[in-house]
Length: 224
Image (cartoon, rainbow, N blue to C red; front, side, top):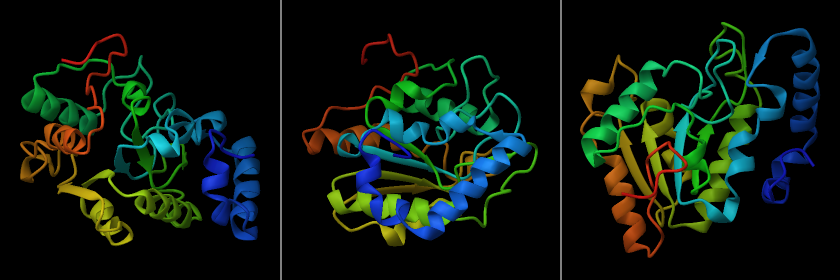
């Protein structure tokens, strides 16, 4: 078992390949030599928090934050005691504008537990070296994840920025795709802010007779 939470069976077509295992064995050794984020135990945190059969929404990021203590294995998320990164600030700004929810806690675990898969397409990064694993086997792995989720249908994919939007070709037509620019300060004002993806996603879930997402990051906060 590599991931747990039922995902090893779902992704067996990729996890059992020689290519993945060769890559992953090298990665384990690199963790002993380099400062790599997130912590080794948190590489598959997104999958451990969100079961395959429970997925309602997929939010796709790129690689983890590359400074010590930030990354926790969830796309756009950081540990609770870390300053909220610029892209996440814009995500929170849009949620506030869209739904009136004010978020302070930058740890998105509460979303993951409700069926929001926060998927980075690259799951590891070396300290201060963004995209250091950009050309690795993680690309094949994440495409397989997207394909498997797509097979079930009736999932809402939030694709922000060109890199994420380029993955739409792996998503079947019986799913829902919401696209915009990336929430980065460089592009958020060109389409992300004002996109209303969070209320739109809940409207779709309601039509599908699925429970809506509470977009508060406070796990003790009941849905408003």
